[in-house]
Image 1 (cartoon, rainbow, N blue to C red):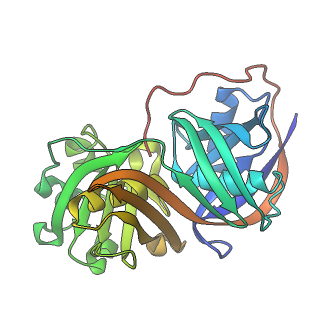
Image 2: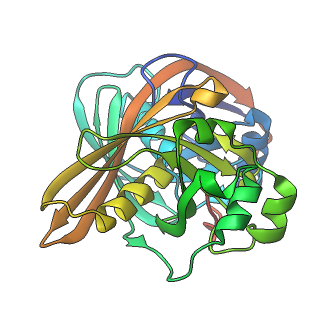
Image 3: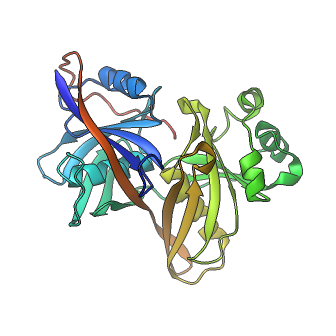
Length: 308
């Protein structure tokens, strides 16, 4: 059978930047096994498969890395929303539209306007009381202890190990030592390392980040929306900010030659974090069809847990 797909770069306004994504606008008839095989064939950090529901603005969305299925991820959700709001053909329009995706984590709402989409993070920010050992984190990143200012676990929907480094140069110098990572961090609260430099002081703040996620078969991710949501959730709780809406811009992917810009938002009321958002632009770069074997597994279960 022939299935249409759209190729998009997410978190960028320029072709061949951002994070690559393949979107199947109508994946009905594909089994989970075939979806996984297709994700491996494209070999992007994620591939998204949409199944239309009764409401024309609602879809079931399944997201796969080359190695496993995820219950939620930022850039596939944002990119899929832009593509599907345009009718699944990748011709992005200026109209406003609200999309709802049934994902493994639950319903996810995305507001789309032209090439920009913003999702409401469907889970609260959570963090354990324990922290990763600084020395192990530094060694896993091939850095010194002086390069690491602080590190902690946390996340909104998906957990990460956040590592604040002393400078953008330290972020660029980080090289993942997989042996150290596997021995000391792979089995922790989260095996995913999100390193960044900069300070969050106001809505004009811009941080520089990189993401190392080998646990899902991706050594480095060029733009990680779910990590951005968790990061602004964490930093907002740590900062003495007035009530209202706060925005953080995160530059990522430059070291990979795929510059990306993520807009992470947080709302506080009564001194409490009450909402998180992630937004960014999507640029369509291609479309086509692929021939796949017929399958009668139309749904298949969502994974109980996964991460990236």
